[in-house]
Image: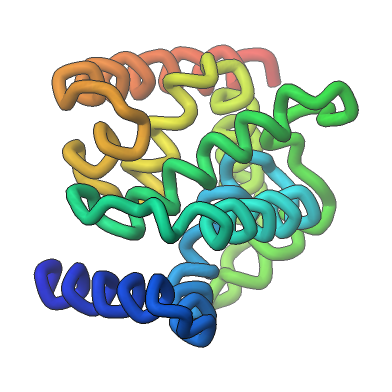
Length: 192
């Protein structure tokens, strides 16, 4: 499946390089949700995520003719997306990550499939707050690897390619990030 996907991506890239702009539209449709999701998790709100995802695809469009097939298209796009999000976070107006909003709480409540008890809703909400607070306290490098691994489901190899670091570094950062996140969540719940 991965090889077929990579072959399909290469076909689209070659069509784009040959002047077929509709090939980029297909790439956009294929990857827009995944890029938006990584931006959403990294930036913490929908508006910034939409802007960052759009900027990611603008950068990809401008640079796709220089794409080298030694990496996969989606890890290349993820790298652009992650770097775009990091740039957004460096902007002075960007307040914080995973701030949590009333909108986030409503979405979490609507996702419940059956009617949980008020206690269960409270516990779930507290866990969500603790998770956001814990993630907010992590360093950028730890937060990024956790998002790519746990939320986006990338393999160690893919994360290494996206972040341009070794697989050993990825594994080490994920391990340390998980431990640090547990400690941060524990601190948050003890404060409540």
